[in-house]
Image (tube, rainbow, N blue to C red; front, side, top):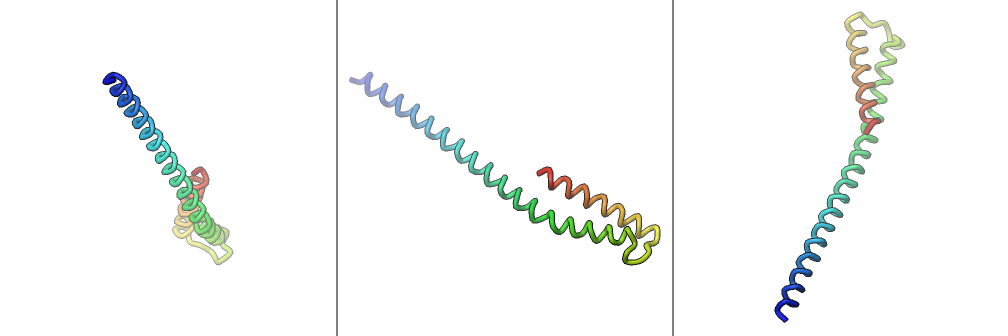
Length: 93
């Protein structure tokens, strides 16, 4: 009888360990999905203002709002480049 009792305890312990591992994996999966949803939301929320800022910079660069001096044009071009890179990075997310 003692052997069967010990065997039952070992089986119960293994079952408990498997259950714990399965629960851990399910929690990791849930957390990963939550992070993906959050990242998607953040990316979506950032695209619009970055796109708007880029549009305004292109208006300035095309000189629809008046002529830019060389320093202003250089700064606007660099800002436009950085915004374009940021938007591309967000899109890849």
